[in-house]
Length: 346
Image 1 (cartoon, rainbow, N blue to C red):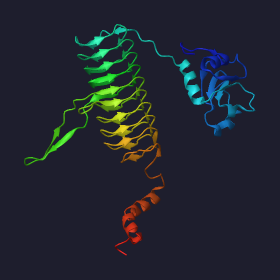
Image 2 (image 1 turned 180 degrees about the horizontal axis):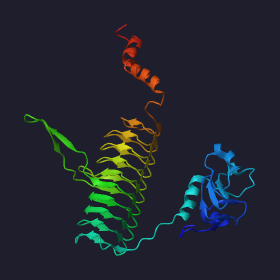
Image 3 (image 1 turned 90 degrees about the vertical axis):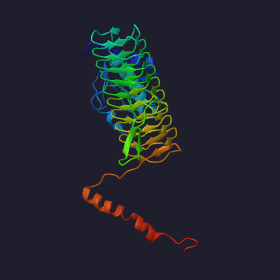
Image 4 (image 1 turned 180 degrees about the vertical axis):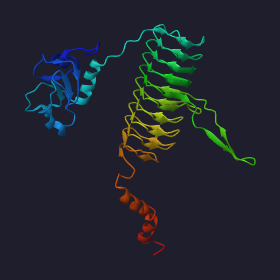
């Protein structure tokens, strides 16, 4: 077992996490696994009742289930209102945070005008720019670059090779994964049409990025700083890998986005929204609270009512898709031919 492995009993888990135990309180748990692959010293969960049939064949020592799924079962169970949430909390016991020593590595560079708390950690080859501050318990991992006028809140972690370009403020307990870039220039351009050859003029990006407490930002995700006002992530926003958040976007608290989502500039997204992978959201829109956008959808207009929204063409064999693609071009003409007479043109 790894050095940080622990052993707990089913009874201890029930008491610690407020769960109802059905079975042997002394059952030992040393890790977690899937319902199909877990062994007798591991804990698994059943969140979807349609997989209840797998319980009989599962080798898991303990399973977290809802009360309705526990009926008639004689095995060791922990009963929870939401098994997946309970499983997530229990699983964290078996992957404790890696301890980090406070201090500044000899190969790191800290600008004389920067402030690094004595209880913070700055790793090898990291760089902290002028007027930036690193709070107590924060970690700036290997190869990270923190530019000027940035703030890293208490207990926040830049894992490795993270770049905070300019005017980025992270709240407490923010987790930023490798390769993420926050505070780069927003894509602001003005086309100067005067003269013989029109050309682009770069619009200065004078704002910053503000990230609330308990947010998580995935690997290689980019969040541009605002043109005038800040780009904002409210607290407990969760972003997956390879997401693009453009300048002056505002994302409400507790919203989650899956990988490869792209959000164009000056769009506001509400609280408790879920945006599926590779969805695209056009600029200058408003999305209200509690909206779910399914994967690969393209949002081109504001959404003002909570609910689930989708767009796109379902997968089909190529021959059928090509035939339908030809018909897409004919839809407007067909609609005009079928249009019913209206007053004035009867």
